[in-house]
Length: 290
Ligand SMILES: [Zn+2]
Image 1 (cartoon, rainbow, N blue to C red):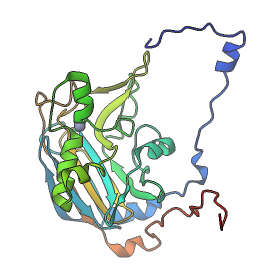
Image 2 (cartoon, rainbow, N blue to C red; image 1 turned 180 degrees about the vertical axis):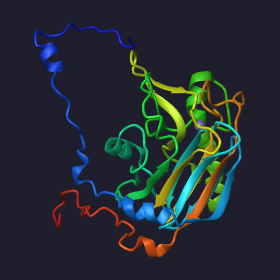
Image 3 (tube, rainbow, N blue to C red; image 1 turned 90 degrees about the vertical axis):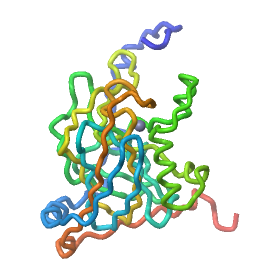
């Protein structure tokens, strides 16, 4: 147990604790992805570009709306930290926390990566996951989480007093700066909490702390997405490698990752429309004239 308990439970403590939970966001009314369209389209798709992400570095890639992209394991077990932005507006970025609230702690086929306020629309939909067989293990671990943030030099310095420059946060910052011409300081403000691709994580049963264990990913595995809007992406090959022991150092064995961009037969996507930003008025209750 992590916390010392200072208070004894009240007489009805057990009764209060035994109340059944309710799902915060029932997703019955969440617009469903048209998976049958994606399933038909992905059968026709052709590889149009491959971006290589070097170990302990990040690379940027662009995916037009209506295309697919895959993050592919090559050479060895390797975890990737993914950031997504709207191609034309860096202020619209992947919103890990709301995606977690809507879809749960780990993503797989049919789940979507949602964008930040005031947009809140699907940026990408997961269309295939070769690791979907993993489910949840006996430790409560699973793959592709939206509970971690990204390894970063600030937390590393806080905990160890050391400087390390190839954390995913820094890798993503350098890659975005090089692509956009922004300074490192400007680019850093656009780097955000990631989708931890291939990473195996959970919360310990006793102390409920965030844990990681060796990724089950093997060369040939991939996570595939459909781009709902024009995307700018950045992927870091985490210095933790398979994240079996530690990150934020040069100790772990690290391997490259590939990002493959695919173009499907667009006629098979008839009926699909790139999603509009949120329909909320944005007034926040302010009355006209106030
Ligand atoms: Zn990392």
